[in-house]
Amino acid sequence: MATECADETHHRASWLPLVLVCFTGLVSVFNATVLPMAISGIVDGLNTTISNVQLAIVAYGVFVAAFTVTGGKISGVLGARNTQLIGLGIYAVGMLSCFLAQSVSVLIAGEAIAGLGGALLVPNALAILGQAYSGTQRTIAVSVLAGTTGIGAALALLVGGLLVQAWGWRAPFVLLLVIIVGTIGITSRVVLPRVPFRGAIDKTSIVLSAVGVLLLVAAINQIGTWGLILASDSAPVSVLGLSPVLALSVLGGLVLHMFVARQHSLRDGDRTPLLDPQVFGSGQNRACLSGLLAVNLLMAGVSYLLPLYSLMVLGKSPLGTAVMLIPISLAALVAAAATPTLMRLLACRWLLTGAHVLAAASVIVLALTISNQWSGVWTWASEVCLGLGIGVGLSAGSALLMESSPTSLSGEIGSARGMANFLGLCTGTAVAGAVLMSVLAQSASVSVADDPDLWSDSRIEVATSSVSFVANGDLRGLLAGMELTSAQLDRAVEINVESRLVALRASLCVLGLAVLLPIVTFRHLPARRKELD
Image 1 (cartoon, helix red, strand yellow):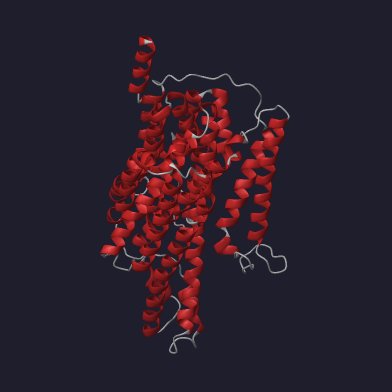
Image 2 (cartoon, helix red, strand yellow; image 1 turned 180 degrees about the vertical axis):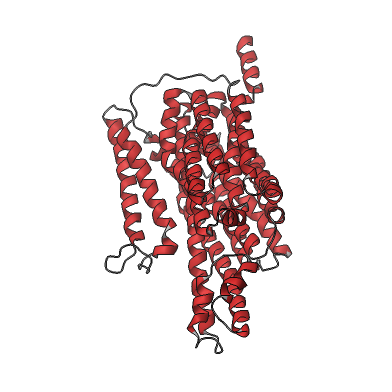
């Protein structure tokens, strides 16, 4: 008995596996956060557009989401330690490609390669924690891992903003490469048990999961260009005037349904499913996963919109933008740290419901109070409350997933969590961008139509609605090329600036409403504290 107690004490004292997965999480969050901070530098440096930079941001998330289920199974085959080393190596290749990129295509490719590495690292993180910890210590470890979202975002904002401002947009990728090398060193010191893998990886399931996610994200990412329901002029095809977005969405949903059905079929046939149906078979797990998807959607959308608006419209420096956004990240960090205590005081159903309501209310208040000066008590207070809601939502959802599942499913729980997280991240960026550009064009057109001094000149409508988010200094130059009078030019610039604020507010409100949707599934969560004991 004394020996067992000594072993347990030694085990509890070893936090090296947690340090490893936290550093890995920092790399992922830093990469995802710093790209929006560097967006103006990338646009100028690579002579590209905001839409293309948005595609690079989405590329990372979509490749993680598409292949994270496969990554979780690979972790079971190769072992957590070997998978960590391979994932970090692939991630390093992606970051090096981004650093050396001379065109936006190479930047997008680099982020996609990093996404493949992330698809191994994301599910492997929970596999490592599941093998290394148990009980209360596991809950704390998972909450700390979720807290790295706040730490990584805060560091990306401050350090990344400083690096971009001082040495350009490539500098953060050098820092990421250094961190990855250090993390590889930590991995080499970690010793983890390896469970022998029996069975084979189902290749059909790999294809179905990847294709389903890719179709869904492609559809969402093209809403602004092709139209949501009715096809726009930019749509490549149109059937009965309907947008191809609808067809892609339905097809993606069907493919994912086929994936789920195949997992049940494989299990019933005594073969090894790519993702154990137990992971998504319980209402509690589905509620947690839908909550994580929605919170990440909100976080990604806000992380894309606010830096874009600050850099392009307000003319803030990258470091100045970072300071403006720090309250969200720090509040998320504090909330994640407090989540284990909150889970002991409150039932998870009400804790997660409160977190989602707080996040939704905060982002809507932010939308209503934000201005071209970005000041005021309500704006800062809404940022803090938004961070608190995001931090609790991420931490409590992740911890409850781990607590309700056996240790043997840690890797597959990590896969499902990774898919939900990164599907939310890339969807949030895509939705925010689509709403932003659509509302911008519509608002500008309506403003011109309502102005009796301008509506007769169709060039004004074209000028104000076709110019999207560019720096204010460049906006007048672009409009000046349309042979407008001085008065028309001044008014066109004014309308575009006003319309960008309207578009930002509309996008934030859409994100706020989206984070409320999973609440209907929270009825499956424990309603009393004793259910968690």
